[in-house]
Amino acid sequence: MIMNIIFLQFLLEIMFLTIIFLHLTKKNFSAAVAYGIQSLVICFLFINSFFETGNVYIFAIVLITFIVKVILAPLFLTRLIKKHALSFSVSTYLNTPLMLIVIAGLTFLAHSRKFFPLTDIIPTNQVLLSMALSTVFLSLFLIINRKGVLSQILGVLSLENSIVAFAIFAGLEQSVGLQLGVIFNIFIWIIIATVFASMIYEHFGSHDVTFMKNLKD
Picture 1 (cartoon, rainbow, N blue to C red):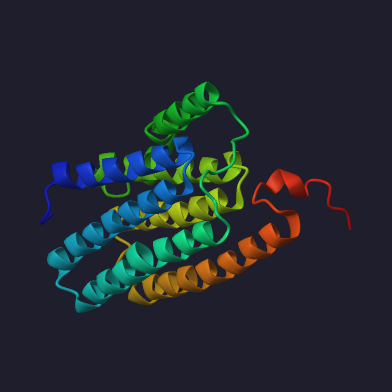
Picture 2 (cartoon, rainbow, N blue to C red; picture 1 turned 90 degrees about the horizontal axis):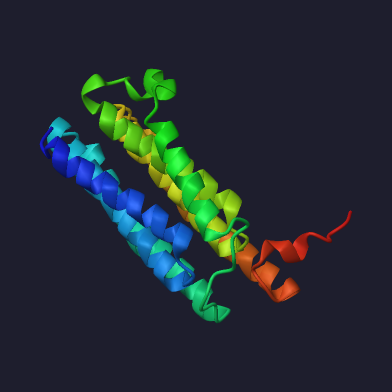
């Protein structure tokens, strides 16, 4: 690898920490910034793939990923936060101690022998694949545990980044059409999610999904 394993592991650790931060932070603006940092890590991983393969299409993916995920997505989210004066995100279903226990458990599970058939696809990347898999699990938990629509949106976007990171270390990043399709879908999804979140706020006066528990057909 052009970037050595230690540096790539460092990048994944940054991504892992941004997801932990998304679990712990109460400030929506900080969460949007954390997602931008996480997406920047994905750009660096694609740059590494570009230098390894020399595939010009991967360089195009780097540019599009940077524009859509690092710049446009945080701007959309920041605009949504300012529009509805959202200074803080809503609470979680689990309290902080229980949440940290679940995070530790999911991280341990991702590195366990149970997932060796998945993380040992490329033996030299086994540690990196385990770390990427743990970010997938933690992103899923973020979607489940957060009560706020904005936090859940960030959870979905974080999950997509985690899957991309896993795909890169599994040697699947060569599918240019798939990556461009995913990036396009993310861009459209962010627009739809922004409109949807605005409609929820206008109707319920809150982005807390628990306010919708009394909805009936």
